[in-house]
Image (cartoon, rainbow, N blue to C red; front, side, top):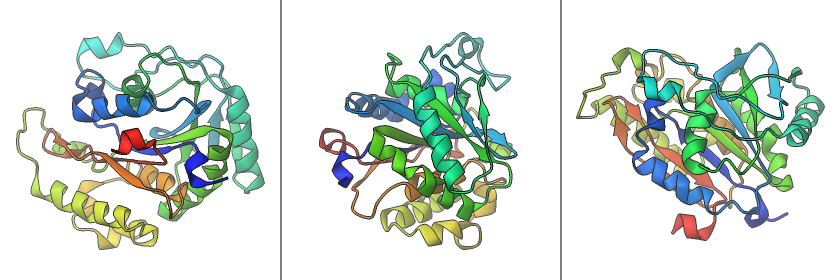
Length: 268
């Protein structure tokens, strides 16, 4: 199957939960992407907000909307994303993971965490494409994230899009709601990563902890960066890259996001 016929892959920096109420440029761009997903039959989301001992796959037919955050505006807790699950597609993911040697289990009741439903409500406000999630193992490192992306990549041949939801930077210790100017380290780290993404240097990204400027400050823990490696490993060298946004919110959260295998109308 050619790269042009594969379902797309997205890395989405989902930012703070308030992204649900403040879509900004990225929300609009995700809406544009969503209008060109006619051939996608299901979406698998890998989010840092579902971490488990082994890989888990959500198989529920009607996932609930999980509000896995606290201290934010009450309006966020009233939001629901009434999307159908994708048990059949989830079964395909289970098979791929098992055959690749991953310890894997079924999670028949788990809903969608905010790393999944917040960006999807902007991309697919009608909730018209079924969704399931695959968890991140607690012990996953950067090379494990690459392996996970490679394992899930064949789903694209079956019309299943891959959404890796994370954050280009994620230091909530420095979160300041009223900040107006980006911290210089956020811009410098994002620029380094962006160059590696454009050059498709997955090996360099896997070593970002020792190579990228301010890596430890940008990511005190790694779970929000690993989805980027999952996404890149699920794509091919000949697939055009689209940067969906490069904004920085609250001074410290880079919203830089990417898409591969998108329709020409989206990348224009």
